[in-house]
Length: 204
Image 1: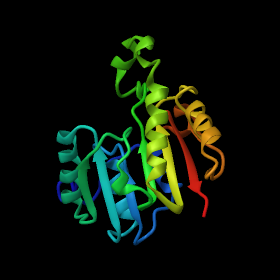
Image 2 (image 1 turned 60 degrees about the vertical axis):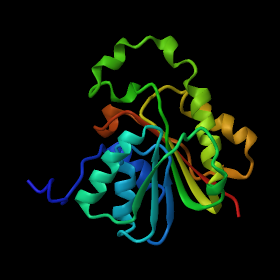
Image 3 (image 1 turned 90 degrees about the vertical axis):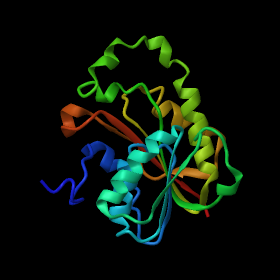
Image 4 (image 1 turned 135 degrees about the vertical axis):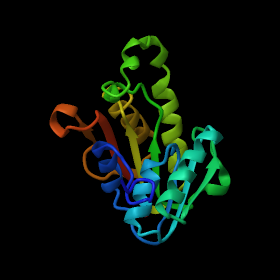
């Protein structure tokens, strides 16, 4: 009851924490680079009290309809969508956003309880993931305005996809620095999904 009327949306606590730690504020410009189905965009819109701009992007255009449907159901007018390959730079967006969220494609090892078929994937299929994740993180950083924050997150517990990617990025990008230590959410500690997030800030 209340769901269809837009009274609430459902999101895992660990995923919500990755947005809460970035503290979206009213009037901000936000980019959700890998947004579908849109949970992080919706939480940003809620925290921003529907005041500002949120660009929700995804590689697959048909998935963006989910974001649009959820935004419409909840009455958020500040979310617009656009298809985008998050690993490739779009110069028109450079330096445009106060907050960029890069919830990157990953091996999904933190959500096996909800997607048990993940356990049957060939580990070799995920060897190239860190390279793709680093490309998305690097590209996402281009879109930050000075003083802006970048959230890098995954729903896996694989260090190569988490700390490994963040550390590789920071070695090449001195213009950004970590805001506190990266966080790994373990299901047995939080009761939510296995999740990783790190918040970086672009220096003024």
